[in-house]
Length: 277
Image (cartoon, rainbow, N blue to C red; front, top):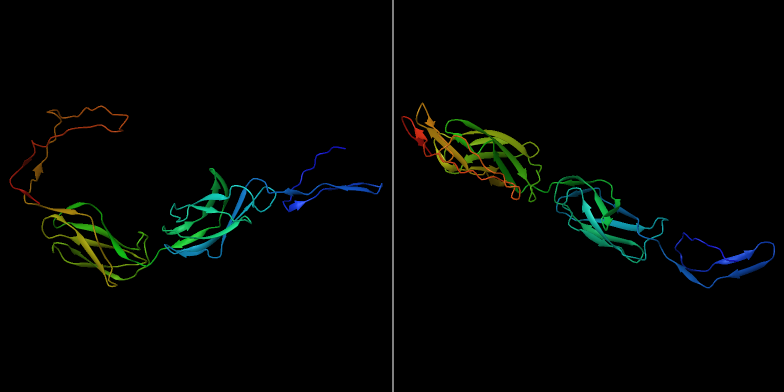
């Protein structure tokens, strides 16, 4: 007799035994091996569910075929990625038993998870992992705008950040001052690593920066800020022309995704005084 037989358990070397029921007749095949099927599932687990940015944690991977057999035979390297795109280990190779443990880390604070894939097909994902910011290492200083009139206040945001740019937990008092010594130093108290302050320049600066220094010794500075003093009550008159015309016409370059326009402000004038900068 000839018949088909499908086996679903990969248990190494085995043999097939056939018995003719009621006749007391048995027979056995020669030994053969049942190996696992294609890799279809990768389980990703970790003891830790919380980790500090930049610190390593151990994760374990276990590969299986469609029938739950450990993936002990076949292409064992899988690609790894996480939701934040900052995982330090981007691949792993399963061992002889279809499992492997590796160390990995993340640099972006927040909630993430790890996905394992092979040839672009996702095979499994971990549970959520919470990445906490590392210790505050600097101050991020951001002015509401890149220029201001002397005498006007500018809103300035200050954040304590770790070495990866994540907002860090810091509740210290921060002094905010002009790099060139203009205006009056102001203070803001950080709450959960963030604070705001209003800064006023008393005269023009071209340019200046704001320097932040916390009571814990960390510091940072803003981008350039241009402070302008208007010495004329009527103000300047700006005039823009495009090749002598009031309006510009340009052709859009679809390859570069841009259009070039040349403008002139030569006809601008200052009425009754100067603009200082």
